[in-house]
Image (cartoon, rainbow, N blue to C red):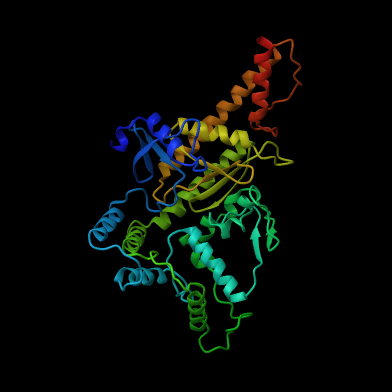
Length: 408
């Protein structure tokens, strides 16, 4: 049976029966069944188009024809592990090296971010001969056991903090400021990539070639840490896809495009902050942006319920967005890089409409609650959005519940 011919309810029942409940769905109360995609859009089984503000993994957009063609043509010829000589892996490494500072010249290809972080941890321990790790609070590094142990986001709900893990609190609220995707965006690598330390390191400025010495040391450490090797990272198909992605980034000038659209989106989201006091802060870089939702300006209490409500309402308006942060109150924008100015305008307009509708619905409900003699409502508990009072959906739920009880 073709995937697009099965009813959504049947697919959901099969998933619940065959997959672990730990494999969570977006919008579990009413999940979306996606059957195809193109660019920055996803399409469900009924042909409805959703604007994708979640899938930054598809950097150049979903199903880009250049990327699809590269994968298809290489799959027709060969896909095997990296223990054989093949041009794609060295071509890809060479192309990547041209985008980085010259001191970063050694590559090791892996299958996932979790595998890459696990290797980084092994390299650090191999080189320093120490076990201890310093991590940022609320950080998440991957789903391997070695990485869950150093991810406060995960270990606090599991086995707790190991004695060799040292957590450093971050001074920011929107998690986007420290999210690994924002830190490792190719656009920012030339400014933020760590370079060999010629001041405190073993190969200092008086060394005849410190960059080459560091590169050789990295190779040695990798060889020792990876005695068995990782065979399928850097396979011919993956490298063909990587090369195609680089081609698209260059020919379509997507880095400059993302900077332009991201600046536009940041500006218009900041204008919404001035209009809606629930928006506590807006931060980001390029097309990776976080909007912090708060219940009050003084305590900056996370507006978790409000964030969940906004995400649900945006979905009803065919916009897919997610939340992040320890309070699940940060709206996290990370669309593909082909996200357009029109998309940004549409997104901000819908967000404004929902916040405004919610505000007036709140005012209307308060008036109804006031009219009920069995309830006592404090006067002046609500102010216009231009004021300094918070917009709290949790309060709204309480008022509605009381109203229902009163008229029951």
